[in-house]
Amino acid sequence: MSKRTGTKVQKNRTDDEFIMLPTVDFCFKELMRNEKVRKGIIAALLGVRPEEIKETRLLPTILRKEYEDDKYGILDVRVEMHDGTQIDFEMQVAEFDFWKKRIVFYLSKMVTDQIHKGDDYDKIQKCIHVSILDFVHFPEDNRCYRKITFCDTKTGEIYTDIMEIHVLELGKLPPEDQNEEGIIRWMRFLNAKSRKELKEMAKQDEYFGEAYEELDRLSADEKKRLEYETRLKYK
Image 1 (cartoon, helix red, strand yellow):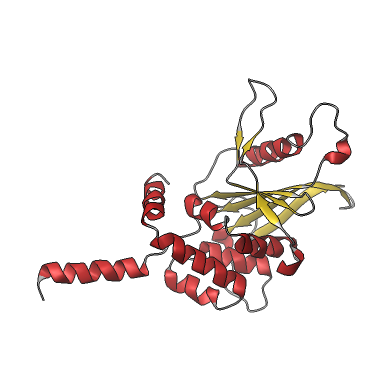
Image 2: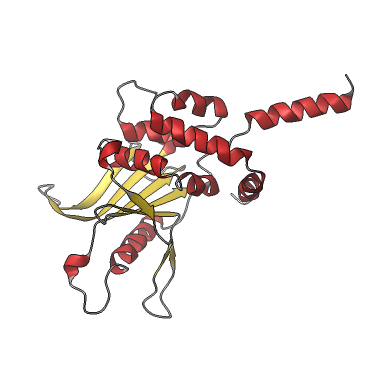
C-alpha cells in the first residue's frame, strides 16, 4: 500500500470517529434545537418524567432593550415551556469574570422582557437560568450541581421561585454511580469526550439515544462541521 493510500485510510478512520462535543457552544445550541433532547434535559433538571413536559419551544435569544442605552442580553438557548416558564441555558467553558452578576442580569432581563407598560405583574412567568460550566465556580466544596432560589436566610423557607438558578459544574462530576439522579447523568453526557463515551450513554434510555443520533447527524453535515471547527479555534 502506498503512503498516499495509507493516509487516506487513516483520514477516513478519523472521520468515522469524529463527533461534535456538546461542551462547544455551537454544538450545544444545535443539539437543543431537537425538542426530544430538550424535553429529556429539562425533565432531569426539574426532577420530573419527560412525559410530563408537554411542549417546549425555542424563543429569540436576544433580550429586549427598553432604552437605547440599555445593555443587550444575548442568551445561548432560551426555551419556553407549556406553562409559560422560561429557561435560559448557558454553556461556558472558559472562566468568566463576574459570572454571578451576569446570571442575575440575564434573569432580570428575562423577567422584565415579559411585561410592558400597563401590564399587571401577574403576567410574569417563572424564569430559570442554567449555567453549564467547565470551570470551577464554587471552589469551597465538591458539589457538582446546585439549585438556588430566593429564600429566608434563617429558616430556608422559599420566598418565591419566580427566579431560579441551576449551576452544573462539569469538572466536579464524581465517580459514576448506578443510582445517580437524572441531571447528573445528563452532565456526564454533556461532558463526554469521545464518540465511544457518548455511544455507551446512548444505550441508557431513548433521550440519550436521541441526543447521540442528533450529534451524529450534526457531525456528518459538512457545513455544520466547518462552523463547529471554526468555533473550536476561538474557544
